[in-house]
Amino acid sequence: MAQEYDVVVIGSGPGGYVAAIRAAQLGLTTACVEKWINAQSAPVLGGTCLNVGCIPSKALLESTHKFHEANTAFADHGIAVTQLAMDVSAMQQRKQAVVNKLTTGVSGLFEANGVALINGHGQLHEDCLVKVTAADGSITELKAGHVILAAGSVPVKIPPAPLQGDLIVDNVGALDMAAVPGRLGIIGAGVIGLEMASIWKRLGSEVVILEAMDKFLAVADQDIAREGLTLLKKQGLDIRLNTLVSATEVVDNQVKVSYKDSGGEVQQLTFDKLIVAVGRAPYTQGLLAADSGVQLDERGFVFVDNQCRTDAPNVFAIGDIVRGPMLAHKASEEGMMVADLIAGNQAETNYHCIPGVIYTHPEMAWVGRMEQDLKAEGVDYKVGKFPFAATGRAMAAHDTDGFVKLLADANTDRILGCHIIGAHASELIAQVVIAMEFGSSAEDLALTVFAHPSLSEAVHEAALAVGNHAIHMANRRARK
Ligand code: FAD
Ligand code: AMP
Image (cartoon, rainbow, N blue to C red; front, side, top):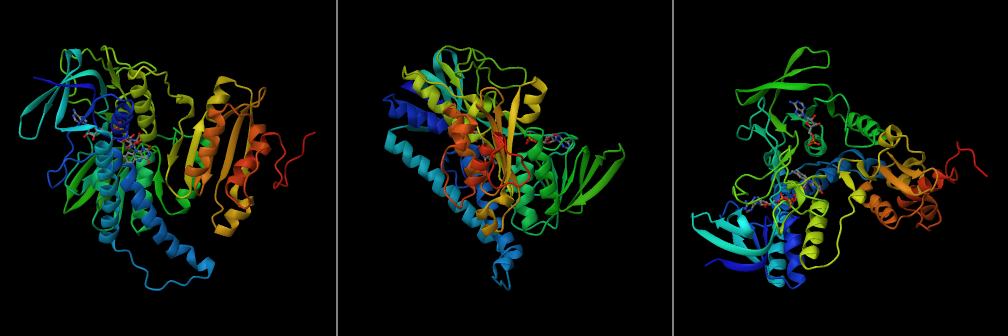
């Protein structure tokens, strides 16, 4: 006999666990199927984000930023540091403690909300039947009123660089290194590649990033990307664009990488470790039985409409397995929307207002439209830009790199997008996300009071600059 639930969620990443909790909060009997088990064969919740993604990467970025600051910036504040050393093992243990706290926290939330956890690999069949195969091969059948697919994504593999032990690794190995590699190669200058590069560079690795595209960070506003490239290169990251990796070979415990340089010449480099960070792909292996009725799109994502409905009745899909940015908060938002829709409530996700962040230092963060797209579409827009170097708080912190750039419609003044490169950009961007959610004009932000001294004043000044009224900028002509 199949166990019956109102909702069965497959996957407990930030999409699935949030959907399950919201469904339970709305009074629906809910089960979540998860197959992830740790080294001790215990089930682990939280998916990529909590275990091998957002959280461990940010834990290591924090640790290494503190180390780097102590190494390079404390002296400016008059702080003398002698015998500075990084204990990589202690850093990794702290990272794991943060991960454990959060993943057990999700288990606690499941218990508190009455979400049943079913451990094993879930497969969707016709009419919302989910068959779960446990590690011992036993099968449990779940019959659901609605199913939410939240199976996430996996790293893209490329033929020239197959993973090999702890020498050629993906994000999992990159976050777990036991020692600082002398020479570190990274394939891919995307978000993950740059964050991994920052972590190990700060601890002393010589880092070379090989990127096939000739444009740096095509996903970002090119103003931010240009500034980011300059600043990251200044930090010593060797970022080589227009560089296509064609082969790798492990010789004497080292990785030889062959690549075509920007002039088309084949070159070779040797590294102690190589990280493959060439993107992520939706994970649907074994997820859909032939009779599930769910269709994939041409890129392998589960095909959904704007409210995450698949082609199968009462089956939704959310997060990294569907179109849109592969971001934890996007997955969670979709999870909440879908749970609400199942409960009969009105719900939607505002895909125009999803912030993106790269946690390098300085951070890069954005929301809404990019200037190059507005230009290409012939939109009549205004730009307000303000450098952190002109804010008292950034000067006090001795952290003045970067700027805020606000884009607004030239006719209506409505905010169209914001792009920030600077310290704490991940926090600052939230102000503009809220403003855009409320349909604000740049003038609305300009008329808002911001605390002094704070980095947020750069957001305020950028809004003022849209109307040519920035106060702390000497080289602008005031407009009547
Ligand atoms: P996932 O988190 O991938 O979870 C899917 C879960 O489903 C997994 O636990 C998997 O075991 C389970 N599963 C899959 N198939 C089955 C099945 N058939 N049966 C049972 N269980 C199954 N995003 C951000 O927003 N901010 C960041 O700072 C950030 N940093 C990142 C850093 C790294 C190194 C990486 C790799 C990713 C990062 N991301 C970040 C992306 C983020 O991790 C993903 O967007 C997010 O995890 C997607 O959530 P999800 O719920 O869709 O899937
Ligand atoms: P992202 O999708 O943001 O994680 O970025 C991955 C990056 O890897 C992209 O910018 C790709 O251009 C890059 N990439 C993919 N394959 C290769 C390759 N063989 N050599 C170098 N870079 C690559």
